[in-house]
Image: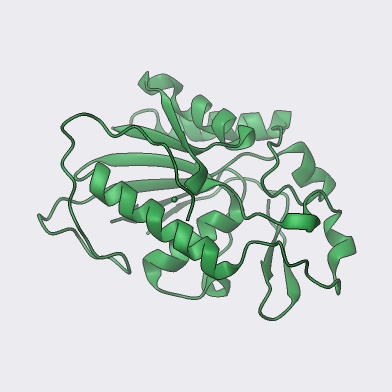
Length: 225
């Protein structure tokens, strides 16, 4: 796995099963309507850990976290709110664009939340390709915690409407299945969020989410599916 790191600010990883918040000093379960190119062949594959598909066609995934947002700086739990990039966050997206401009990338996917779409559009610009959005890449739904000041949440009882880790990983599993079936032997860049990106890697490596290394804002990781 390849790591391309950039400057960061902050986000949290939360595990309801232990009812605590681990503060990280860095900064499709949905029925998604996604356009599948006409005539695209679907292939059934395994999901966990480094398995190639049944016809030995490998999908290369560049997994990206969105750039820094205003609420990242303010330590606000954004969840599935749209979010707005800061000037620094926009520059982070430009840095990724410049690093990957010479890569051959067949498709650009993004969460349907604004902070990810804006990041992905900047990165896709030199390639002349449209960005496809999907709710499968949305950030974790924090329910009644959404919009809260993160330091105030320590020790708070979790609301029942927070998306569970099982549901999050199921969504990540569907996203990886979609990638393998739709883009065999292709390179795809996908922009998501801190926790959903953890879930994707948790499924890929078949490891608990708290064993997945944090992703900083605008960090890129390469997964071969």
